[in-house]
Length: 166
Figure 1 (tube, rainbow, N blue to C red):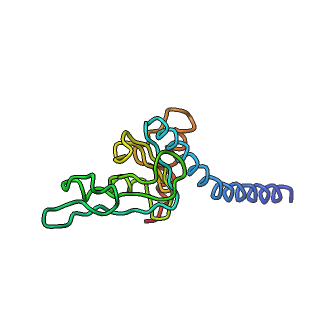
Figure 2: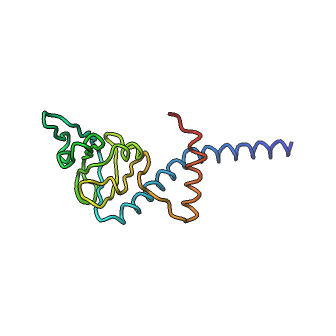
Figure 3: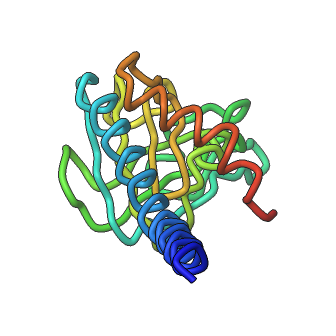
């Protein structure tokens, strides 16, 4: 009877640990991504933080083609116009409430309309050479070589990727 009780207690303990890991680990991973993005953006001269993000794609139109869309789209030439989108929203820190980002950066960061972002770049308008992060990921972030960063990067790459559904 004692051996059965020990097995039951061990199974319950393992189930509790697995349930805690399922609820706590994703939040810890998300917090790590935000911390990583904040560190990366903090090293650049221009930072922007937005909530309730609105993504406005830049498009070319007209007989002599011009770049239109958001307010900042007119600063682009027509060759690069369709590769960028203006992101604006409610300021949550940094310097400004809109910037241009490449569509690749927006997609890799997982930014969605209505979401939040933190970004940094070398220009207050065109921030595609810097860092863009949202709750969905990070574009331009590089992990530091601390043990915690290595563990989270390994878990993010090998463990979490196996559970994602697309």
